[in-house]
Length: 631
Image (cartoon, rainbow, N blue to C red; front, side, top):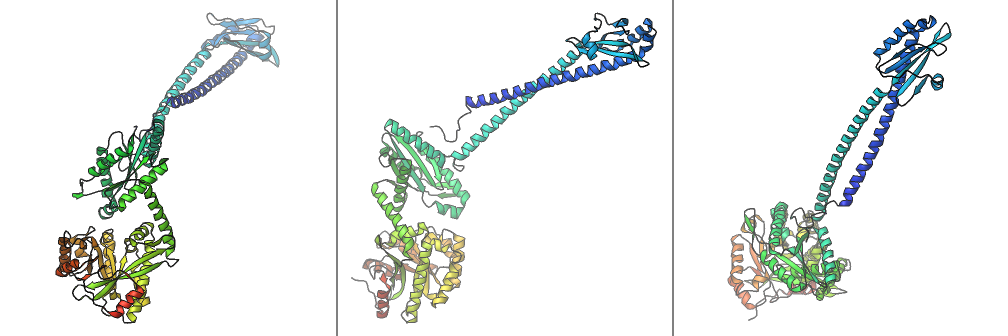
């Protein structure tokens, strides 16, 4: 397959146009040269005529005495002076009757001829000579005339020299024009090739870009139609690439993209075409008669090729990718629907935990349509008062008393019915709805907590935990809004606990550190949610002004068992740093016993209580029950 960055060479038409332009220019130059030669001839002839007329007048003045006295010897001597004028071939002094009194001729020259034309015009041009007649007057009467004949050969020689000079100049101009045209054509071709390269090649990876991909895909689909073949399209999206850009910088991100592109080239066959179509997205086109099996084989090779770490700035980076596969014509009827199918399959691979490959199926489209409906309805949910808050108690491990509760959003959509937070929270984050949604949750939770506090129902409750999304944390006005909200509703800052996920905390370390310092300065409790699933290290934990770690439910569900060592290590780490620990997702008595033995501070989960609406939690706050794990 021809590389996308190679533009076709200039064809015969381009050369013919250039030659035609030069021929036109040459013809125009030739016409100009002829006109110059003609003009030069006219100028030289007029100069010669003027010169002869002057000489004839001088000779006439000097011969007036000779004519009056018919002194042939004096007339001859007067004409002898013409020998110094190379242009004059012959001359004669005529009396009033036209009879020559004296004459002068160079060797081989013919005498001047006095005809009717010369008498009438006083000068006559022929091909070879110029005759000039000048009357001689004395005392107001014509006493004779002087006739001079000049050869035109010197004029022709000068004219020929001028023509040769003009021809040389014209040919030199044509040669220079040809050279300039050739250089201009070369420059234009180089510029066209560079523009073609820029238009069709990704500058970072040197892979074909989206424009080239679209052209190649159309060509592949056309061949598949003609040959009854198939085309497999693989859409690759690097997992967590944004973290690399945010933590190491875009320069390192570009270097990583180049390394990924090199490794992908090495893993693919020569017949497979790979393109980079956006930030961290690549596509591979596979042409074959059995596209489904070969596309799956290519996807497996890609996952294997990216399994090895990348050496980048003295550190090893592990990069995985999520791959979506769609087949033409089995899954699509054109380029757009094929790309849409691969995109749908890729997002399905993301939802399954990333670093995997998924082949498009029609039910994926149904899920994608549901997601679109969910996003459209979610944008109206706040306006239509469709969202509510539920509260899940947090239980002290030692006393069994409720010491806090986490605020959780719930949504019942008129079109879709009850929608799980696991479904609509990711949609809210992707669509940007998470910011107004998070603001509503924070405002509603603080106002409700302030009401319970004024009623005396929060005695013994240490914190009301509200989650912050990464988008909210990036809002520079967040703390101003929180402080204004607390002042408005009258909730003591120490009762509010803000939860940031570990991955969100690591997206922009410096900005988040500033936010955390402001949270701490305001007297608000700060907790790190889903600890153990992100990218934090001991160095960051020491820098961040946090109060609490929450062990992710994936570790709690594996205790006692495989997760025991990790859970124990997290608890010990937190206590060594002076932090409290909350375990999420507690569902059985064995987990409770393990967490008590590991000295975990608090627990929450369905074993104690599912998330409750405000009225149910208020009833619980009034009862002050002691939670015990069932046997």
